Image (tube, rainbow, N blue to C red; front, side):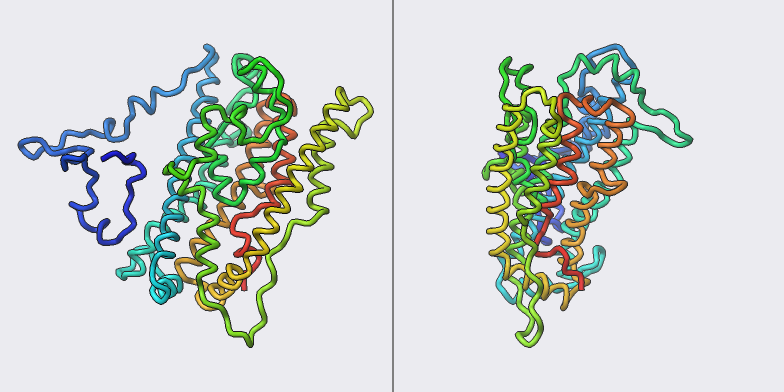
Length: 419
């Protein structure tokens, strides 16, 4: 078996239900994991199954400061959750694509079916992996990631869980803003319709380039290899990569919605998908300009900053134009979403789409309790001052969360249609 076992998952109900068929095997038919010995005994133990030796031995502190160990583990915990979310996004995408491949009548019947997770029905068997995956996505975004970040803040009774003073004793050993190199978070954002944000020249790349290449590079996109280094391929996976399945979620969801029936012509049509307006772009550009200090008379390099603003506006104008063109093509997807919410609001498909939107909100919305809000407040209040993430990190977090990410919501054709 050449395929990575992690990605060799089956959605077909018959394959999943067959204990022999669902066993991953090598080319010679031997089970890949825990093959029985000559006497039928299974020798794999808990630690071996989970790979605990490699997992718990990963990460190398740069100092003898005890709090650095907590710093490492908090970020590792986030990455493990990102891995689970990436896989769950792939499961949802694969389910949508499998449904698209079904004949029209069968596809429509499954799309309208109410597949309870543990119900004994063909519809439930088809939808079960995607239902649990979408539920995990929302749970991870709401209930796992924010509390993990809070381990670097304060706990009950205002207990300090991570010392700002202690952080200052080892932070100089690290490349600043390294949290921006979380490639799988970028992949999740791409899956949730935010790919255009990752391609805007908005981040001060000199933070990294002076360490990695020794030369300045100006402002770069978050998906640029200057930022993501070896993780760039994961954030923007090629079609041959198994992670590309996760990245296709938004497109697959809209294609599926577009394949659904329409409500009768005697009923009013759904409202159009919201477009990105020129005012939205202007507000984001004004915020970016203020971030660079152009609003002050003492900006350190006004000419360079003006060039960065111009490049940012050009990128955002192009991204908004492309996104508006995409949304203009969503008429049939919008009609399909309208039909689904009117005819089968409790269907498994409607449940999954709602969970995906809730995941997007729980990660990115500029409101209390979301992952990015907790992360931003942790950085600002408990770890470092505004410049503490390394030459522009904190201002970027604010600009991104309040002015850029909201322009590119997940499942635009499904948004704002609750009937």
